[in-house]
Amino acid sequence: MGLNDDFTRRAVVHSADEPWVASPMPGVDRRMLDRIGNEVARATTIVRYAPGSKFSSHVHTGGEEFLVLEGVFQDEHGDFPAGSYIRNPPESSHTPGSEPGCTIFVKLWQFDLEDRTHVRVDTNKMRFIPDRDGVEVMPLFHDAHEDVVLERWAAGSDVALDASGGLEVLVLEGGFVEAGESFGKGGWLRLPRGGASTATSGPEGARVWIKRGHLREEPKAPAV
Image (cartoon, rainbow, N blue to C red; front, side, top):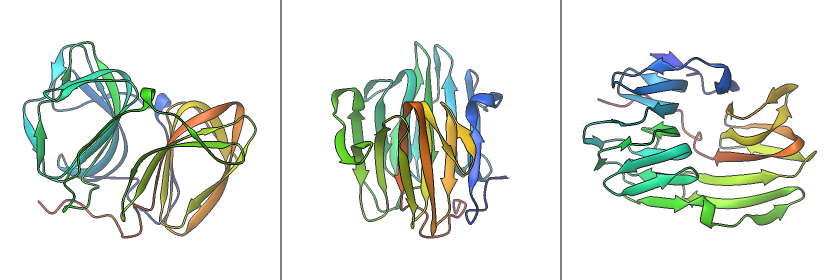
C-alpha cells in the first residue's frame, strides 16, 4: 500500500476532515497520513484508542515514535497523558492500550535501526525557549538523523520552513497558512528534501510539532 509515498513532492492531509478507518485491532481506528508497505509499514498515522482498548504485547522491530494528542496512553512503562512524547527504539516491546481512551500521532519504521535510545518526555512540564522572531521552541529529540521539536508561533508571524533535509509539521493548536493553503488543528504538511517555504500563523498563533532532517535519504518500505 502506498499513501503520500512520493517523498519528492509536498504532501498535505487535513486529518480532522478525514474519516476514521478501523484497524485490525477492535476499538483502534486510524487516519493515515503517509504509508509505504502493508500492515507492516513505514507509516505516519493518527490513531484513536476507544476506552478499554489495547493491543497484545509486540516488538517494534523498526521503532515507534508518538505524541499523545488527547486522553491517556498506557503500557507497562506508565500512564502518558496528552502532551507526552515517546520514542520506543528498534527491538523494544510493550503492551499498549488505554482505559480512558486516547488519540496519538505515531510514526513507525522511521528510526536508525541501530538506535536504542528510549525517550519519555512530558511536555506539560517543560518550557518553550525563545528562538527567533515570533518563535519559541521546545526541543524533544536530536541526533545525526533528525531533529524533533515543538514550536509556538506568535500570531501573525512569518515562519521560515527550512526543509533542506525534509520537514514535517503537525498543527496541535491554532493554525497557519502555507502556499495559500490554510492549516488548522490536525493539519499535516510534509515538505521534500531541498524544499523551503514560509508559514504565516493565524490570529491565535500556532503550536506545532516539527521534525526536520529525516528525509535526507529516500524512505523505503520495511525489509520484512
